[in-house]
Image (cartoon, rainbow, N blue to C red; front, side):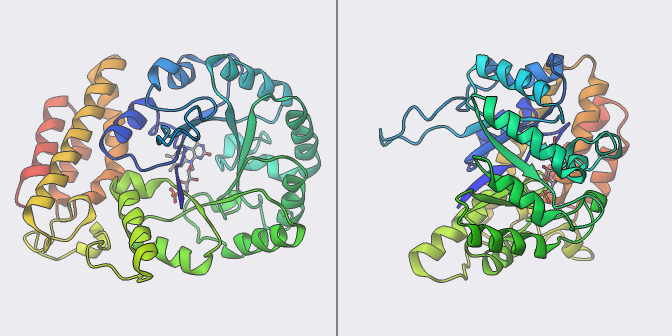
Length: 373
Ligand SMILES: Cc1cc2nc3c(=O)[nH]c(=O)nc-3n(C[C@H](O)[C@H](O)[C@H](O)COP(=O)(O)O)c2cc1C
């Protein structure tokens, strides 16, 4: 299975990606949050600068065939509906050493979609076709697409699949929701079924990567059962909630390959705050989503890794941001997800949300990590 880290604007910038690779890793690809300005603004430029991304491979796989595992690939994502802007941004990225870019056809935000960009571009298939024709003709980099399956309904999805099938799309990442579903409506599995059927019928060799709501091992297992032919999965909020997630999925896959047995006592279903309500924290530790019944040293080890990861992020943001308030804001944004790695710690998590100074924040974080309840 190929695992990919989803782009998440405001969270998975280079500080997060570098800290994640250092303490967890396990992804084959990482995507940058979208770049939308032709000139690359300060934030966008910093995010893709090669010196900020030394842990990643920007160009072609140099070590192919050497027997060494190449570093994971970093793929910058572009959000635009103007071919000339796409080509201008791609050219800047090529000059920095990148060999691959991704097109955002999934952003559901009202301001983006109403201007015909992101998922909004899916509402005008003919214009999208013309755009793709031009970029695939002129762009020297390989281009993948991250797409939703429609705007107001799924009516155009078949046509859109036909359009993608005309071009040498490096990979199609499908988030099976329409623009109006935003991030909360149920997944439309029929969108994935249609894509797989159409691909099979037309003999398209374009790899499909599935994305959406794989936030636990159980959700991953259900996906594998439903679509065993899918060999690529992009993970987003599940990793923010539980950075050990990809390791758990990989362990399960290895076990499956080795023994053909889908059950694994060592790979446990991550606990969530939701599951844990009302239970004693002595019974459920939940560090990194594992149960308390595990050996204490393994749990302690995971706590240490999460702590080091947290400190690396905090230090990183404090270094690049002006003033602690901005770093505080950034960390709180992450805790909206990361907090799920600490079931039973609701009181301390609330203190993080309410912290107005760095001192208050750091005390609340220590409480989350090290208090008994
Ligand atoms: C805070 C946030 C920011 C996001 N930013 C981007 C983005 O820049 N580009 C993009 O293609 N998708 C973006 N997404 C969508 C995710 O990449 C992903 O498709 C979505 O979260 C569904 O996957 P998940 O259920 O695994 O999180 C964002 C999602 C969130 C929650």
